[in-house]
Length: 88
Image 1 (cartoon, rainbow, N blue to C red):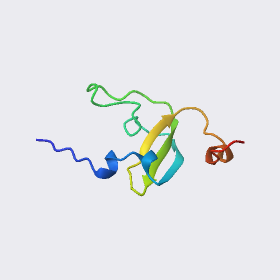
Image 2: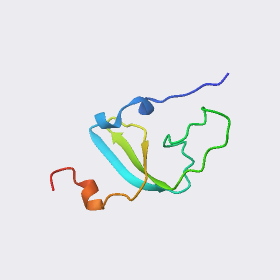
Image 3: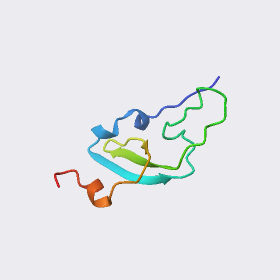
């Protein structure tokens, strides 16, 4: 029998935390599992070749949440625009 353990941090929505953290990371060697581009439960075939991409990693504090990995292709936004959520 296989047991799947899901923590409270995995169930919480980071956007409902008091403190929201985020970062962008290169995902050159990502196989698509962590960010959901490819799902191994679809079949037993080998994962497809996935182009290099980036991950937007989002996690919350108070209450603590697990990190969520959101894939995107292309160039990351300029840092000044990324950290500014207000009008330009």
